[in-house]
Length: 433
Image 1 (tube, helix red, strand yellow):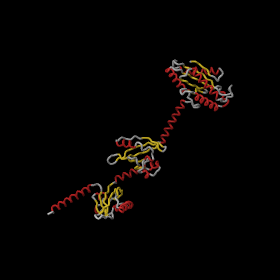
Image 2 (cartoon, helix red, strand yellow):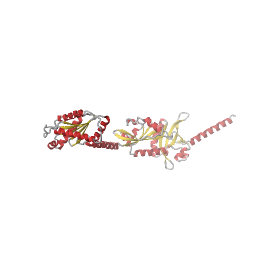
Image 3 (cartoon, rainbow, N blue to C red):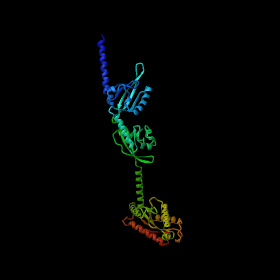
Image 4 (tube, rainbow, N blue to C red):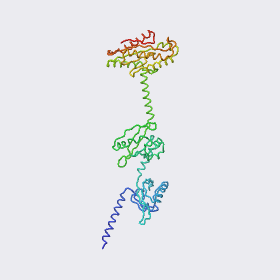
């Protein structure tokens, strides 16, 4: 009387079994079972497609039978350890030889099986074809290994995922030992801005190359996102280009240009500004004097009996004398706005912005006394040591600043200088402008 119900239950079970088979066969992964000896007792339809053998030639054989000897030894050692411990395992990569001689790379995961009494009876598991990914992995490894630049991949936590030998050398460690380590351990400051970096990559915006200094070297850093199958950013690839030589060359060039600018404006012997630059600055100060209605004074100085000094002591001693004088002039000017320069030969000029005649005479006398105080021997001078004569000219406040004023002021100071020389030297002469 219960027969129709039993028949319905059997039909339902068969239908459910067929649904499970359809699901298994439609699955792109290979579902399998092995007994306690590791021999296949079940294989879904994916197995024959992956290995190229009919299911009859798979059942009864072990997974190791489809591997090259070296690979079988490696995988067998791992598998036997798992079996002995009755452990789950996953992500076991293994290379298999297909019936046509080609290689298929599988990622294997499995769980132990037990019968109703709890006795171990084998494993059930899944194999996934990762040949394409593995081929890409080796291609990337080859690219990384052959790349002349330090290359590495970090995850979103800024931990090393991959690093080539060039990067390993910079870190001072084997490449394998870097995996999983924070890049900040080796590149101080690299972790700063990590969140901003990935926020920018997540938004699809590009990352401009940047410059860093690391281990006393300069590098340009290039960044590209690493994406998963769904397109999400899971990490970043970074390349370092050593630009130390270029940076040093740029610095040397900039320094050379600065030196050229200095040489263009300064006297090579004394370090004071030269005659050309003095003329430019004097014109500027005359315009400022006219604009601000302030006085401007000019002092011209000349070393007394300098030709005799050179004849007795030689030109090298003469150069030393001029350097000493330039140093005394520079050190005794009280204001940053005061300008001392070498006009030519043994002649020097001092520009005193905002200084009237009285103030200029005071400065000139101070400079004369400072030079004499050096007591530099000069046996062909009446005083027995080096002295200087000075001439002062002043442009009074409110004077018209016409084109010829600068030359007029220089001429006036020169006239005052020679008055001082004619009056006996080692003194200050004055000419009102």
